[in-house]
Amino acid sequence: MRRIAGRFARVEPRRRVRRLVLGLLSDLPRKNCWTLAEHAGDASPDGMQHLLHRAKWDADAVRDDLRSYVVEHLRDDEAVLVVDETGDLKKGTATVGVQRQYTGTAGRIENAQVAVYLVYSAEHGHAAIDRALYVPRSWTDDPDRCRAAGIPDDLSFATKPQLAARMILRALDAGTPAQWVAGDEVYGDNPHLRSALEARPISYVLAVSSTHQVATRAGKFQARALVPRIPRRAWQGLSAGAGAKGERYYDWAQLDITGPDGRPGHWWLLIRRNRRSGELAFYRCFSPYPVPLSELVRVAGRRWTVEEIFQASKGLAGLDEHQVRRWTSWHRWATLAMLAHAFLAVTAAAERRDQPAPADLIPLTGSEIQHLFAALINTVHDLAHRLRWSQWRRRHQARARASHYRRQAASQP
Image 1 (cartoon, helix red, strand yellow):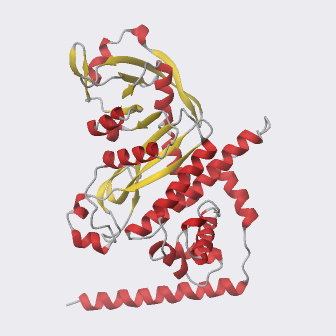
Image 2 (tube, rainbow, N blue to C red):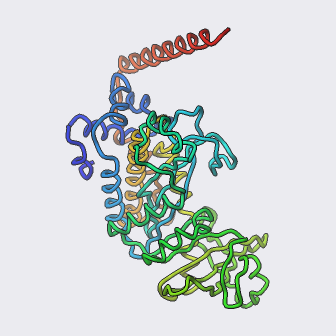
Image 3 (cartoon, rainbow, N blue to C red):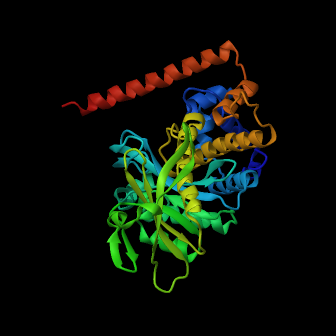
């Protein structure tokens, strides 16, 4: 909180943002302005809503502080910047960026809000350091709708790979120590993102589809068409890193491919084969210098850390529970939820480094640290506070019900 305090000109929002982050770090079963305000001892959620909507502070400046905090404590010169998107299921059409679209959260097309995140994945831990809300064309082509949701007038449509490129280059321009970029097929199949990374230059291992075209000395081929040409001795059994059930072993092969004419560097097609099912996955790789297969496998395995971040940020810090509709409010909530999770990630890394667990205990996890931290900071409110909140909720719900009934009656013939 001391690190970001200077971003708030007045003491009131400075104190309130501290209470909000403490609420995000609590063990509340549901985290939104109502529950966080009650947890903080406020008489109503008005103050929390004001902080997210109308108070004067810059969420991008706090994001920069968050990035420096993560890098300071998790610094790794061989770190991987991982990009991926996640969706939050929403109802209605007024929430900024919402439309029917595919989201991995549901595994199908749903009414959802989608955002792209950038994760700093280092040897000792990982945390999200940037975020970008995906605003579909159905929004950017409708200025009135954008204006109603508080979207800046100069915002134009950007694809998810374009959002990812902006975040990656912003992190590198800020001096973030990292050697690699990783992402799934949405990003690997995009030639503009790959070109931007190669021009930097920064190495990458990006998943691509099986039909992705790669150039070799013998011509252009789909990635899957090259598999039968790989000799048996070229496959190596290597672990992509430890998972929940132990080391994740696959068979891997590395093929040289050619990159853009006149651009220095080395390009490969990396192929992963499941030892049981034979299922294949493909990665397009680039580096300014030669690297061994084991290094490409290490980076490919790091991509999964973004899934851990999404699970922990949503499960522990309320990343997907915001219940806000406007552009500014979304960015403020996402930034503070990322900050809360980064605190857990940094604390877990420090504990593993400075206080190694004995052999009969697993290292402290973010979930366990949150449980202990919540117990240490828990403020017990008196019965009168609980009763006031019960009355506030019921009064608010009564007004909402009456308003709904009035609208319903007015719409009847």
